Image (cartoon, rainbow, N blue to C red):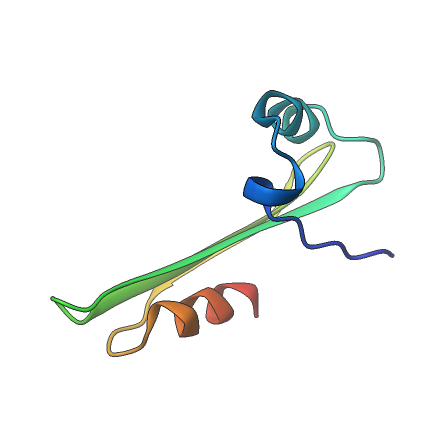
Length: 79
């Protein structure tokens, strides 16, 4: 399996093309979407992930993780 991390802002400047790729994935392709966020003002943060194949959603997860940094929560989502 090949793993490729894509930064949509720099690697796929045409968002319409990126949207089409996400909505119509190739058979056998698996996409993993992750995100994490932290608000320094409130000290609250969270993370989430979705694993999708062309046919179905394979896994999802999310959670609260207070007292961390935004970068730490991005990493938690990926793990």
